[in-house]
Length: 400
Image (cartoon, rainbow, N blue to C red; front, side, top):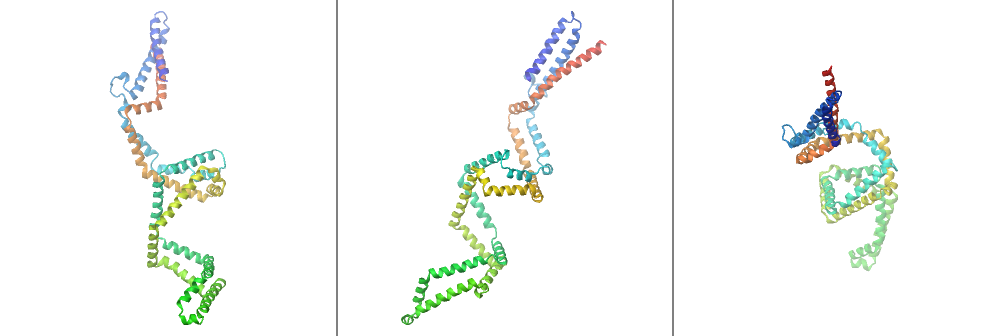
């Protein structure tokens, strides 16, 4: 475009000098000379104006030229403020987000079995796998474990345990566990019969042993315990069973309301978290979770084809069809992004202005000229042609 604009200017100059030299012989060339003369003046003026934006014309330090290199810092500030005032303030972001249905788009994305969404999903899956494999496992694992342990340490678990136990008792979900405990007790009695007999034998004196009473005493104890487990298993209203259930109900209430019980549970929780075995268990959970994420990300089609795929597709259907869920998610997304704009808008603006300020004058000149230079050369061409047309009009007025 530079060559075209400059070529047109040179053509106007050549036409002017040719028409001027031949005008005495051909008077009608005065019209062509007027057109070429005015076009040459318009082309030169626009060349000067366009060049003065980016550099000094012909290298001469003419005042008010090389405007962009001299004002690059101010341009950076203006660009940053433009971004902030038009894109990075919370009301503007919230207003623009109202037109976006992020939840619906996510729902369609999760439901799509093939097509562009699948290609995007595969790319995103590879990115997730690369990120999890590329991050420092020891450092990242340490952060994850510290985060988990910190959240559990800061969270009071006693009320949660008490509420969960109370709910289980109210819905009789504790009954299978209680019956399982009774069956386990019965099996433990059978498995440890010899141990119980030995304990009874050690605690009886020689007179009872001589009379063989220790054996009968052991039989009585074992038979009584077996009968007790059978009765507890078959009779839901058995007194021992009722007392156990009452003890569980009292424990649920104490976990929620009794300060000393809650303090004791918190102490046990902290001791548990400080235990090295628990740390190793959390580390194992992290490693298994990380490996599962990488495996699923490396083969997203298999993940989508199984139970995970069914769950994700079901979620997609709910997101797209359920107006209440979709509205809630879109509202949350609007608030989250508007909050990010309010919190980090100034930092983004500072990043833009500092980046432009850090560029050297030649860099910003080259980048802006490559972005808008083509249109600026059209201005030179238009100036040449418009100037020539004005020259013709003025020559006509002068002739008439």
